[in-house]
Image (cartoon, rainbow, N blue to C red; front, side):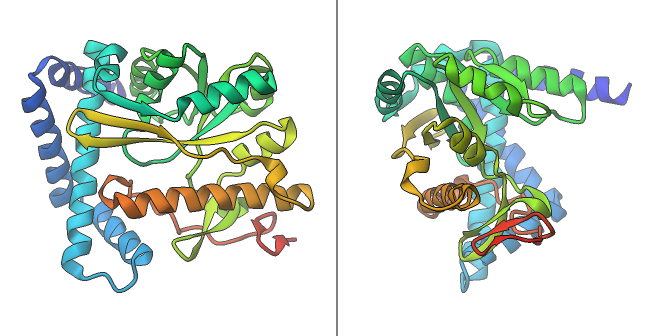
Length: 304
């Protein structure tokens, strides 16, 4: 009952934000972010700790400014969801500058297979579908289901408006090779913490557990990976851009060494983008929480 009530409130809130005038709705989003920064002491503390880890020696005032901007940015992401729910993908498409997407299409035509697009908890990753509309390609996005199945269904509904197929992360890996063989794109949020058995790469100079799935898929299917980012330029103006592709063939050694190399390369790309726009990174996630355990992959190899 509580889960369904939360869903009703979330859907109503997104609908209201969706029909509101653009300026007012994004001011509301910033207000939600400000309220979160003030009231959510636990996540505010996590954000500040992460910022100090990423930028050693940063002044307390500057760290607070970055944390506040991050909270307010992700408050506006709530408004983005409302606009997507009510107005659909074309609303975003008209407000987006898109660059680099042709490199993905040219690779797919040349290789005769799909591509893996790597997303990070940075900016406005949910509007990736706008890029696929422009290029007229299908995309399947791997997503971790939310605990509240009703809200999970709502988020899935919003995401599939772009359009893109949402695949449950649980058990998804086995079917991804088939999607790539059909000359389609697979999108993966690839900067998540993967626990003690993840790939431990350097991220802002400190070891961070990272999901191995994209690199493993790329190695097994000989598919290129394309880091893609969505930057909020101003409220409802977006810039979607694709960085240089990452190929497994760029790395030598064993399978594990290639997986580590690919994952480290992507972590570096994300780090470079976050340094440029720190206020649009999701600092509220405990990125450096996990420590290596048996099975973890590090630069020295697997921990046995």
